[in-house]
Amino acid sequence: MTEHCGFVAVVGAPNAGKSTLVNALVGQKVAIVTPKAQTTRTRLMGIAIEGEAQILLIDTPGIFAPKRRLDRAMVAAAWGGTQDADLVALVVDAKAGITRGVAEMVDRLEERREPLTLVLNKVDLVRKEVLLTLAADLSARAAFEEIFMISATTGDGVAELKSALAKRVPEGPWHFPADQVSDATDRMLAAEVTREQLYHQLHAELPYESAIETEKFEERSDGSAAIHQQIRVARASQKAIVLGKGGTRIRAIGEAARAELSQLLGRKVHLFLHVKVDPQWEEDRSLYREIGLDWVE
View: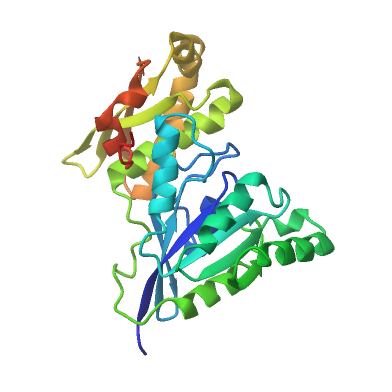
């Protein structure tokens, strides 16, 4: 059998379900998922296998109107993820429909050379006639070569999409070992897992003025890992929220993140968290490198 391997850029508006879809296609969790929009901050690759095909899924940040440096860096990462892709999959929240952001994105994608696939997600929440109208309206705006209607959460339609992507990626040797599911380093994965818990446990209490920096990742002689992380927030009031009364909140965040990291890394993890108030963290070039973003003026 001939091997196939290619890059598929997964793009869309914030909260369209891109990371949930990438996880579903890979068959296990490689990208963090929260109900908050703009959870994904950097390009992250999920590696899916279908028969003789290795599908390299580039999970990109949601594309939106940037207002600050971090926003601009995230949007640049999203569009950068489409560079040199063999295929671009546009994920649209079928319930939200054609928002202004989606319309602008489709117009921009129509100008590009990469073959386009339309993925209407969250179809379990929308009536069939609405879906058909949405598909027709989007098809009139851009030359989508294929259209799929799926629910990344329930898995409906995901197998059909995966099979189609496998047929579309070009012939060529696999880029990664068969058992590798992501290009994320353990250091990056650790920061993402803690950030996910921060969002899950604080909900709307903490805005996006926060970042996780993995300061040290130490291999211990007993095979375990000691991970030291700094949670950077913009204001003292936010630090108090993260810590919680008597430190209860940060302990809960740490315990949940430690348990998930131990499972993902397949070994015992010692996780040490502390919170730092840094009103200018968004202007720290080294932090952008740490979280995998390019500095954007």
